[in-house]
Amino acid sequence: MSLIQRIDALLPQTQCGKCGHPGCKPYAQGIAEGEPINKCPPGGDETVAALAELLKVPVLELDISRGSAPPQVAYIREAECIGCTKCIQACPIDAIVGAAKLMHTVIIDECTGCDLCVAPCPVDCIEMHPLPLGTLPVVGGLAFSLEDQRARAAKRDHARQRFERRNARLQREEQQKQAEREARAKKTVQAEVTATDPVQAALERVRAQKIATADAALKKAKIDVAMSRAQLHKSLKAFGHPPTFEQQSQLIVLQQQFEAAEQALANLESTAPAVPVAPAPALAKDADLKRAKIQLAMRRAELKKAQTAEAPAEQIATLEQALRDAEQALHAAESSSDQPAPDLVRVEKRPIDSQLRQLKTELAYARADLSKLERSGDTPSEILDKARARLQDAERQVQDHVAP
Image 1: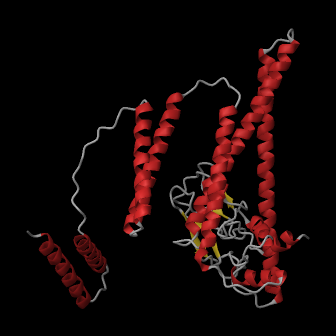
Image 2: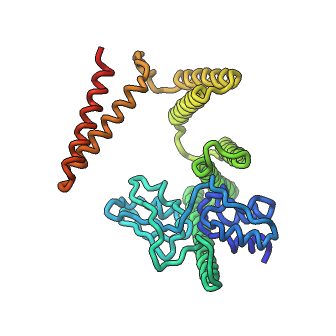
């Protein structure tokens, strides 16, 4: 076994991405190239100790800025499941079974607790539960016996095999789809070109092959963009606030990978061979308009965040200029778009009264607590009296504040 394989054998095989890599094997490669060994929350102290022993390096404390990952499994509230299959597509080891428009469920014995299925669920019917008693986690806590260590190693190997088999299946399905696309293109050429013109038939076959190849490359580029975007967002969510210097460096790399994937996709789209599809310039203009609106919203948020943090004047000036540029870009996109100009109405907003907001929040909490106590039939009268007095006091403070 190579060093990367031996390192990968010690990782938990959750493929969760909390280390900043898209899976356990890429992180193993990073460790072999010198990355810290304490970036795996699911592995915990046990994995850090095992890696330190393997690599003959000091044991590090677990990087808690990447969050915690206790032994857990995913649970689907089946009555709320709409059968969208998004969780099935997100699961890296095929531990979720179901079909489109039918109920899904999690195979608890196979689930590694990576929680990658939670975010894609459009109805929020997936939640993570602590691992049931009597089941063995992939990792978590120190192994106190040799049997425990062997059992965990077997569980990790099993999860790795399921992950590799899933990837192999997806690759076979993609190859089958590519073959079907090429077959359809070839069939179309054979139907349109007569046998009396063999030169034209050969040219059409070459053209159809180019279109099929370009279509596959374009689809792969779109997938690369989606995966790099998801990895960037996942890392932003997993890292601390503010991120450490190392995390910032990793975010820069992920951002560069995302931009490179977008550029590659743009190059393929600009050089793709012509296909018999009607152009849709209005859709492109609408996409530019939407992108300009998103950029404007991001610039506004950045400027507001910097002003709240009392950033240096130079940084504020740079962000204000970026906001003005984004506004100009939006005006240009609106001018070139076929959509009607928005009917803007200026609304004068009163400044937010932070004290009034705090008083109203206390009033809402007091009202909710009293309602909860009243619904409970066994609440002592003394507690009810205190809750009512608290509500009356909150109402009085709000009235006194808003009174002229």
